[in-house]
Length: 259
Figure 1 (spheres, helix red, strand yellow):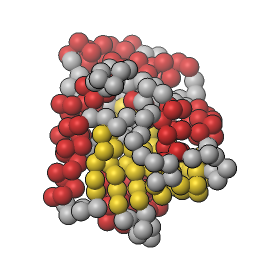
Figure 2: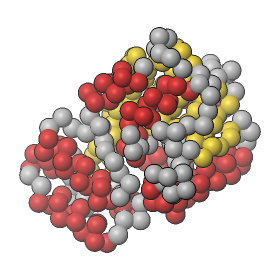
Figure 3: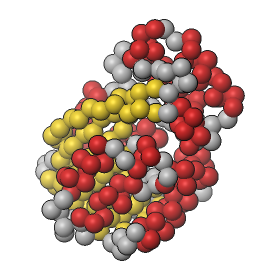
């Protein structure tokens, strides 16, 4: 992608900022509670919210730390975050327009890096994780949260197909083993893995991304025709609502990685 070419994720998400600000799926959850708890007591920390989207991680952690930089490829998301943070009194929040794979920050400039429901949009997971490690101080805390792919190929194929039909900027949901290996390659030491289930109400799920009618029909067709084992794994309901597996990975930046 040339420097003048709009990032594909940004073009997809530019009209969706308000939906993500008001999304209950993104604004609440035990994973957010875990992130907030992990940052309590880090009053002097400088935090990077990588792929901030509607800013829900930023709003949770801002009261507990010295500064938060909310970073995203979508300018309209950043505008919403800046406005909402100011309205909520979070004067320590700033925004930065950038892709995860090319961060405009000096090495070792953050104490904490957080990334929630963003890595499945990255063009290159390894490059994004290397950049996250580069800007994080040695020994610094990183928390990555995303939907994870099931271990079985049939389930994986079903998930990736539905995700791509719903959102053309979807790249891949990675498995737990892929995540752990990628973090190790990037210079992180994984400390904990917390799996959870995420329930998605179908109508809200497709409305949030402005999914077209033809793609909605294709998703429903795949759900209805799926083998019983697939429908059972995702707890697919009659209206198309279903459950996804998510994972919260807590890691530390290894001290022996060059920054």
